[in-house]
Length: 419
Image 1 (cartoon, helix red, strand yellow):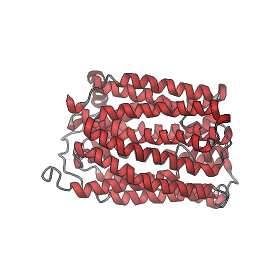
Image 2 (cartoon, rainbow, N blue to C red):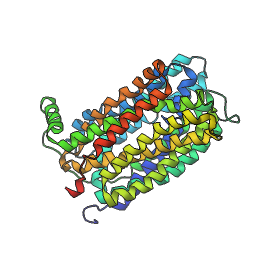
Image 3 (cartoon, rainbow, N blue to C red):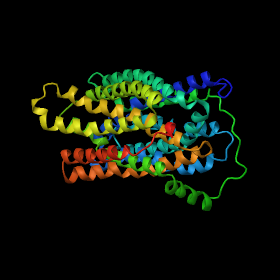
Image 4 (cartoon, helix red, strand yellow):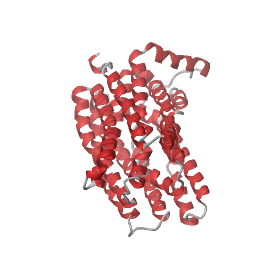
């Protein structure tokens, strides 16, 4: 390992630091709890609330094929990641500044600025991910990635749980008034993400020979489509992921259901953040071990199963809420499963793609996988429309059906390490 990965320890620590501080920053601006609650205070439009997750997913996923084509011919990809991070990660500072300067005087202006900031942040972060994962795959050996994921998610989870407690205090009765409480959360989130960038800057990128000539788009795009046609396992992992993504129908509405139907206070949004992080910590430790012992296929299946558990728990609580004494803490289980599900995507789906891809095709596989995954961006918008025309049980039920179908198909995947 020392010859093939001469800077393994340094890179391991730098990637863990990057991951830990980024996760902590995202806990302050969680797309599952904090952001939907913020938007819900500005508008009662369900499709607009669903737009939060649509922009976050779509802007992050769709441009990645462009990024894959661009970085494929680059000898060094680290500068590309750093420049994009410097563009995207300060975006929420602008939202915080607008809140501190105007308060809630111009609601629609604040709402528009937030969606613009979210789009720029997500596009920049998404474009950088292809290069980030390519550097990771060359800097960390495959059989040590599970250890890195588990360590980063566990340590990051502990800090993010502390962030969840801070969110609870900031949104509580003793915190700043609305919208200044959310302005403080945006400020803290952006600050931690900039610290994570400082950690990534310490990575020693392994050398890679640059391609002599980058393929033109008229050649590159048909080759990408050929990957989906010819690689059956790659095509299958995309289908499984898209079906699992139907669980995103309800994703931005779990917290809205809590505040509007269960009458849970804004203060308890911090509890949901901590619950989501706790689920991620527990799952990351187990999945890190499972990844190294059994491979990425089993982790992928576990991830889909956890995604299925989320709407099922929400449905159970919906029908039995009058008989549940501590409904707030019971409903927090929904966010425990969301966090556990999130922690499995990198160790399962993404690691499976990295392992099935030929080494010189990794950027193409990652970029195509994430771009195809961008089709799930319609799920939250569809969920908003479904909620306005039907009910929460129908919304949760449809999310469960998509996850069930995904789980059934996942048994047809093969483990690359055993191939």
